[in-house]
Length: 164
Image (tube, rainbow, N blue to C red; front, side, top):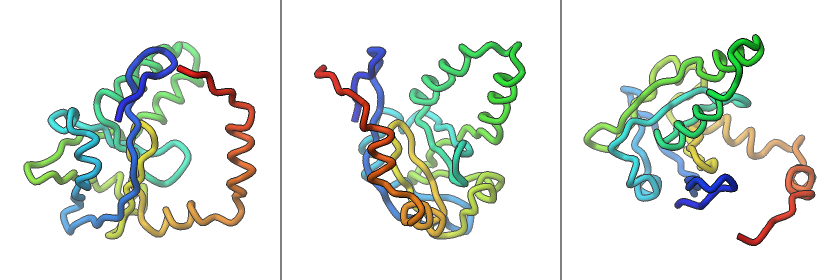
């Protein structure tokens, strides 16, 4: 699904949460529902990277990754914190592709980083898919220390929506 963003570019908005398994060779089958949403991107490589805030992975279709990189490239690399951010943001970034049966190989270093064992959750997150170890995902989603109603109000409460 695509929607025009504020800057006028078409942005992908993936939908769905799916439980899957990683096989003995560290491959996962991309669910059919995601394949349907990503039909125009399946022949291109994907970017798989570490998440900034959690011990999970982020899977970007190439066109969405290019938008992220476009924004990153605006940073002045002669400012140390910008350079440090870029280095850390891109640490472990991998270019991966679907194999002929529709599976993605999760490189071992990223699998270890995210604590991925066998049971995983693929969760849509706007323009990318988060890949979680199932136990870690359940801990984050069911965290009683987070008051979701309060978080929603803090994040979205002052947001005025304009009609397009």
